[in-house]
Amino acid sequence: MVIACLVILGITLGRGVHGYGNGAAHPACTHMHVAHGEYQRGPSPYSISLPDSPTKYSAANQVKLCIRASEIWRGTLVQARRADNSDIFPVGSWSEEVPADTRLMTCSIEGDSITHANTKQKDDNVCFMWQPPTEPVGDIFFIATVATTKDIWWMNLTTPQLSPEVDYGTAGGYGIHYSAVLLLLSVAMRSLF
Image 1 (cartoon, rainbow, N blue to C red):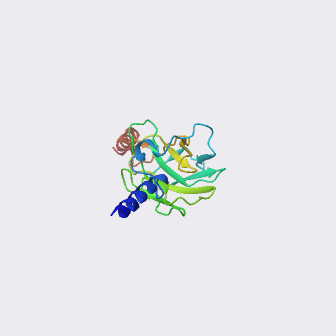
Image 2 (cartoon, rainbow, N blue to C red):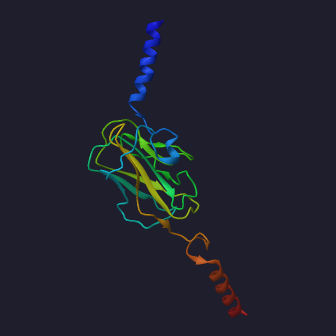
Image 3 (spheres, rainbow, N blue to C red):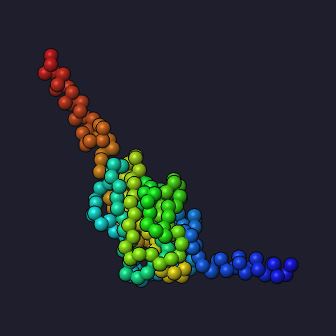
């Protein structure tokens, strides 16, 4: 009995030493803090970038985001967020086709975050495809936490903001304001009579 208790205690305590080997814990969804130790405050060997340099987004086009690393990395949490911080949850979702050793994570809607699937060393340059939401959410940016080890990690890595491509107060989403449509219809009707 004593041996069984010691084995269970050893397994339980041993699991905590390794952090979150199969992905970020759900509480990290809102604040990006991975809850193991203090984050690094110096310059990060990691960055996140948008290689296609978009300044706009739309529901019709996915956005490519890459983690670039000058050192090995093993863990991550990546999300798209509202730039005005009006919501603490991620927006949009990620393509189901993710690179090896990473996986989708659900914080508020299915697949709205990316995390690591294990603690294996990841490639220097890993890219993901983000699907914008179907409804407008205003300006957005991407944010990431990247970990070298359980105790060495950086948070609040961000990209420049992206704006919605379409003025969602428009007719059919094509940039033609309702007032312009009404004016054109009015002129057309007058010319007919």
